Length: 469
Image (cartoon, rainbow, N blue to C red; front, side, top):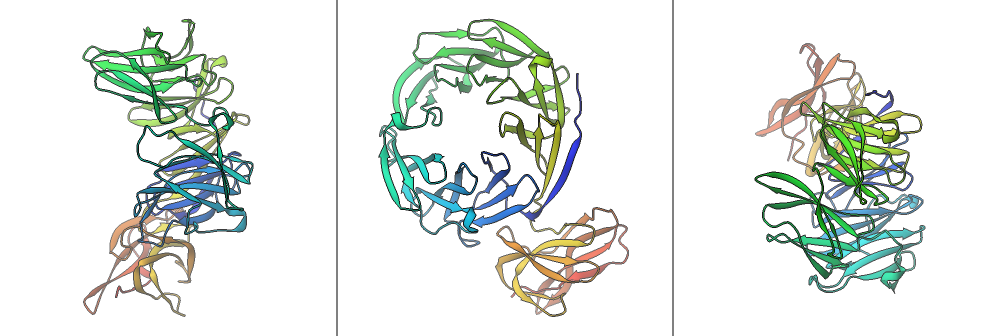
């Protein structure tokens, strides 16, 4: 059975991202998302669709640092970020205290290392990190507790690390089909897998006692299960996209239009049919037996939710990369932003990001936002002289009155002053806006924001023209 849930709300986020969002970090409450965009970071409030902060590692155009990952504190008021410094080829730890209204990362890191990972916060006061001071992977990882407000750093043992928070096992697969297991960066065991072909989709069980992997060769794909102590390497009766259950008791596998449970005891149970779709990903809930599914149908990516006990699934919308916020709520990426689904209320919330680079976008039926260089906002409200094109800012203009105002944030993408004939239509489908050429001055093009009706009539300039110097 397939049921489509209703959309509870659709909130536009009134900010533009400087580049592709390459990492999404939810806080513990599931109410905030940190959207990492390489050198930039947005903190998005899922409850109302507002953007709390726009943070840049350095000044626009100064790309010495790159945000790799981040971890939220328990209360969601602090955010620790792992930043790679290209000038030193080392990782730095920088922290933002959002309760203080910080809008920019500190210039200096709390610590740095050749390899560094933030594991978790202890409440809101201390950070637990892992680092390796040398690039040699045989050097063991060291653990530390950092108290940012006091500048204190003290060593920890592996036994003091909170259980289940650090991947104690990692792996490397050789061309000969041998998997080398590592614990805290130190090789501990070599296991022989299936020879020949290709080893892919390697996944550890939650307790790290088993590894599942897919072996591919000319004859097709097979799914295998190996114990990390080397005592067992067995082939499962079928193969397909799979995931470990959260409790580690077995695998969930897409096989012959069905989601199947294969227990470690060898028992097989068909949970529900999913005929007519291909399954790209299965994401079990951290607790219980609920599932998120990424499906494909006719080149369209869909997100579905399922409760196997009821033997059916529900498609909740177009999207990809579904993830859990907690046992009752999940979120996923969409072509225009994010979706958040609540299992308890069966409601879906859509949040649309404005991500079209420097072309103009409509905020509502009468307001256009666009990027232009830092300049002089003249009293007429229609003139913007660009003097530092590398320091582009967001500007809004009311297409009826011509009133302009600055919008928070700095744009660090491609040149915003180039003529762009890409036309965007207003939400009420009455008007369209674009950046066009308003002629030259002193041999330089003068871009301007134009508006007309949807048929091209009533063409007029609502912002500019302005000139690059």
